[in-house]
Image 1 (cartoon, rainbow, N blue to C red):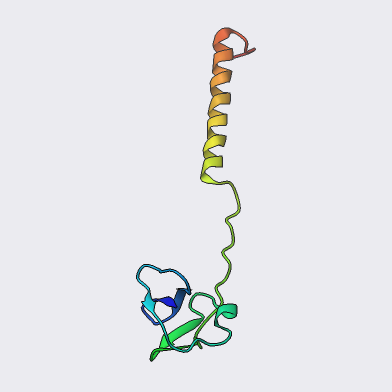
Image 2 (image 1 turned 30 degrees about the vertical axis):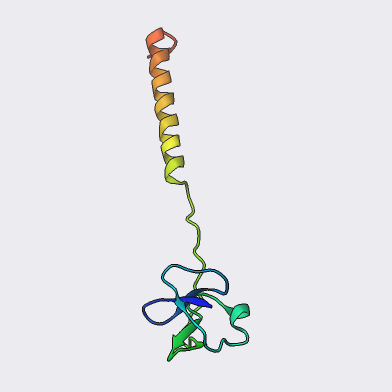
Length: 99
């Protein structure tokens, strides 16, 4: 099995078949529930053994930003600019009253 480990010894990925760039070959004992419970950083490589990371904290899900995206804001601005220009064209054509 190949594993990738970060700078603090947390196992961040593994493969049983194939290779991962920058991975190390691990041939020691693998915990029985390793594959079922694996999450990045859930296990540590310590003294050439895979152990549970006692400091592991479940990552909080990222909350998507609410409100318009940058693209939506730009589209709205273009729509307003179009409406202003259309009103000016109508005025120049004589279509506007009291203008």
